[in-house]
Amino acid sequence: MAGPLVVIGDTLLDVDVEGETERLCPDAPVPVVDVAAEQARPGGAGLAALLAARDGADVVLITAIGDDPDGHRLCGLLSEEVELIRLPLRGATVRKTRVRARGQTLVRLDAGDGTARYAPSREAVEAIGRAGAVLVSDYGRGVARMARELLRDVAVPVVWDPHPRGERPMPGCALLTPSEAEARALCQGACHGPDQAARRLVRDLRAGAVAVTTGACGAALAVQGGPLTRVPPPVRAGGRDACGAGDRLAAAAALALRDGADVRDAVAIGVGEASRFVERGGAATIKVREQRLGDRPRTALEVAGLTRAYGGRLIATGGCFDLLHAGHVSLLRRARALGDALVVCVNSDESVRRLKGPSRPIVDVRDRVEVLRALGCVDAVLVFDEDTPAAAIERLRPDAWVKGGDYEGELLPESEVLGRLGAETVVLSTLPGRSTTNLIREIQ
Image 1 (cartoon, rainbow, N blue to C red):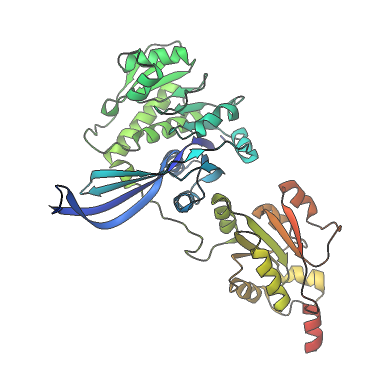
Image 2: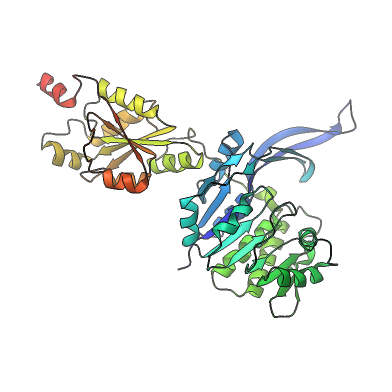
């Protein structure tokens, strides 16, 4: 089975403000838009990754996203459909807001100056190592610059979708997919027309193939060692909104190459998907349900994934939490203060019986979980059946694991997995005299 499609590139936040306009503003000859709805979606590399995921592929997106409200919103839009590996961004997340009425864009407002800041990422290297194909989606914000190093020894097909303000594609790519304007920029104005540009770029960049996209006319395709051909679209969508068509073509072609298609067939598939995409209305028709940590109760793994996507610090702790008392609450509050989200790993009833004896737990696991979830300092609860939380830690991959009590110098059962994950172990003192065993003894 082919590995995932890994998309490397710049992700933007696209926002469509939809409304109706029936009159002009009294103080200027501009339309007044009565806003009816606002729809957000990922743009740039994020859109290419989302479209590939909706084709049924496993997709990993390596991108730079800012630690700001627009960046958090982007992570929420992406986190449920693609695996997100987040790189740091210098500056604000780029947001493009289109004000639209009756299907027509009236004005676009651009904000954000963010550029990628290079930071070596073990997760990114590992993702590329298991890739079935790679798509570099360059939007001129710096992530493609890192792709050269990350892809130096890659053995799978690489598709590079360039940008006029971006990086020159690395030599040896399986396929380049520039627009006519992008091809002219790569040729430094020395080429006349898409055919000549495609031939020259195949030679200059030692690419397997170059498909210069020509809008409603499809693409001009030059293949290393072969004749130039024209790839026409199956449907004509002239005059419609073509926003996102290049991302659709590149993503579809990359998936086809991953699945074993030759480059001519891959480009034909890409052109067909892009033309149908425009015919259906383009990027404006892409609907994404926004995900935020506070929208609804989330599973522990959802909280862990979203926290990582936001660039936050995930804290985890574990225990039986039978007869919750002030010592437990104090520990959990202090643990939560160490990061941005706290997941509590709780022993199942069978696990507690093996550890504490047949008379325990006093409170069954459903009630223990319900009480823990009611605490404002707890973001999620994960129940585990094993004698130690090692497997739960492996699934959560927290940044820090909190233990209560005096464990200085003592080797914990979960130490091996914590060390392998690079997670910090934090020991917090417990409140004196507070313990479930003492509480049970007093009751008896």
